[in-house]
Length: 376
Image: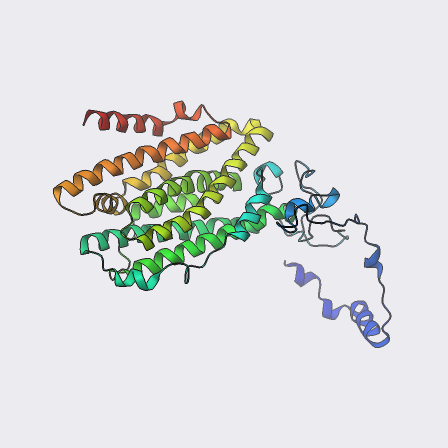
């Protein structure tokens, strides 16, 4: 039974009479003026930066003293407000700080707000349309853009899925992942626009990668979703964006990838700082994390092996489909794949999980790739 079915305000005579009396006489109760809350006056610590979340870290309003588990607030009430009896339980199921918090999460939010850009006006679309791409390059690029649009659509869906599950006391995290959803929606927008401006349109979706992306969406907990999305998938994509800038066919395309990179680096930063927080505040989770990574690495890093990703990347890297171009493209793609995995393990080491490298089948496969490259 829904809450509204048990509380019908328009049929509550006392409620209606009180409203009518106030509107008729102007006499008010004003008990809310005596709310049992802390009186503070926050001000910017740095006037140039303005009033930030970090400046609000005072007393009951602050985030530095959040309890390990939020028990009192399961409503929409903002942290620090008085919560009167009778507020509905909105059934938030993420109430442990360690499940969501990250070092500097408030800083990531402020950065996200100050570095927004516009996919419609910040790219030289007219110049890009005037630069006609050769058919093999154009089709390969459109295929890569199709894949990236798929990736960014799931990267929009995942944070949106979890937002309503997070306790209202974690509003810095909720606000940050709201900016992430906006970032990812803008990425999907810009990749779609670029594909449709090439003259070739979108190409083929990847069954292989559709399954990988579904795995990201189906995580059992927010921490698992964050580990898989922010640190693994977006870390992989961050490396992919850097290489894509390198192999981009025009200067306008290079600018496109620089813009999406700045957002993606912020998302990866949150994922790293969240994992670091979990390892330091919930060390018993270490083996659970390893077991999740065993499964996740198989899905997330399997994306590069999909035909719809590997082949266009080779063509773009080698700048064509002649024999020498393909040979060069294979070499660049192999180096990219190696770097992608190496950077992933470097991030895990910085988070406090250095043993992951030696425990991972992905690391073993990457070492084999390096050996094959050395023998060529």
